[in-house]
Length: 464
Ligand code: ADP
Image (cartoon, rainbow, N blue to C red; front, side, top):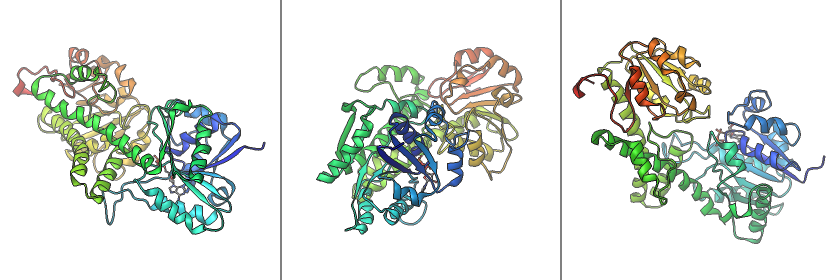
């Protein structure tokens, strides 16, 4: 079959895989190829067990793979053969040199730009899909302009706003698609070509365009705003615990104001995921570079509150369990950074587990999708760690349960059965406010929610 468009994506990760699978699914007349330097990742995408878990992803990949969706290893040839190239390689926080711990590490990004330059034999549209600091397109343009005279490259910014756990739903029905370009004749033409691909399944009014720097910056700002909502409600949860208010009631009352809205204001143990912290630190670094320390400090406080919230959770466990965890068994329910994903990058569970191990607790970790990643994250940690998929087996004999991920499954567990199997007094730390806390209290648990009064069977406040 002759395909109308030949599309390549460099980087077969959480962004590249699902977003390209959706394009292939919606545009059967386009050939979509995804390459990655990790051959292991490509093999996994070609196998029965995909490297990324997302509800609905398996079906789409299985429908299109081998027809118009291909996972390949020959990066050089694929760059030659395709006309539209998405770049979704990782841009982690830089851990060395200038900007260490803050700035984005652009080495993978720049290597990709140089590869595109080296192997291209015809004009290309190069699209930034990864989240990048504002003005990165300029670097890409400067590298690619070394090909001057032979043919041209047009660089676009098309950030991916999908959320992990709902990626397929978001890709199918996004709030918006943003395409930024240079406002030149060729820039606008490339912008229109990319818009034409999305217009195959997304209403035109949802496809918005902008100058390239606005587009790059919008992705960082969107993530910073989302994280800010989480830190805002979490900061108030600390106050609720002191003032005998209930964070769920406060969030409901506040969220019903249509100017504020009810989404993303659930208190918990803090945000995780590969993006929020990295993108805020990146924003902070940019603000400092542009001589805006007040703006930088404002955004940095969002990350600080996130760390504070995790610390509060640990301190509460320690204080509640009589200031010693040595030899006690703590069952962690949920290791993924959020429900419906196996992703554990920057998951609060990593830090919390390390802190529990430092107190010489025995940690038993249960999660429906993230145990493999949890074992990788905790490899090399000293202490007793056990991994058990079955939450009932994991909880058996434990002194405490700590719910760290908002998996729906944890709302439905038989807590009576779990309580019976645990050491007494049994503690339940609901780090996501997901369970029926009153019911668990009636069963016999001492229940410690986030941002609400504790439900304790001990007699006086000083006793717990
Ligand atoms: P994201 O969440 O942004 O998708 P991931 O880390 O899941 O990030 O995926 C990025 C992918 O990009 C990884 O699989 C990595 O191997 C790949 N990658 C990084 N550099 C290159 C490169 N130069 N060429 C091809 N693939 C690359």
